[in-house]
Image (tube, rainbow, N blue to C red; front, top):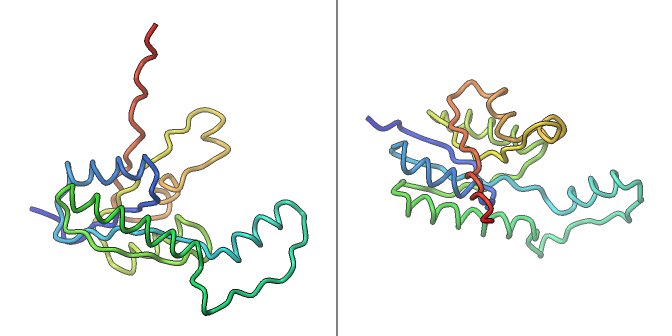
Length: 161
């Protein structure tokens, strides 16, 4: 019996594409919401300038001009919805502005929609890289009280000698 609603976190990466494919292969749901979280360019610039220690001039976004990051997120999300439909899922689009962290946005949307399961791809980092770069999927598992299907990256083919 299919679940009512699944949430697929989609950022356009190869790992996210793989997660959509596996969701279609192993799960069934009446509805699948493909979520792309995005951060406005003005906040990205402020965060990056803060990290670099360089003071940036005050920039106020023009309401007449759509944020490049939002346009990009909508395009990425459309691709995710298309892939989910190709995988046999009854997919719908959702782009949400990220105000804190990507994982927080995913967990909050999952709670708001009361989804049955969250699907996310992982980067598959190991060793010191895994310690230094905790993945979004790991944080979703730690902070969500819902089942999460984490899809690891595919195995690299062995080099030919």
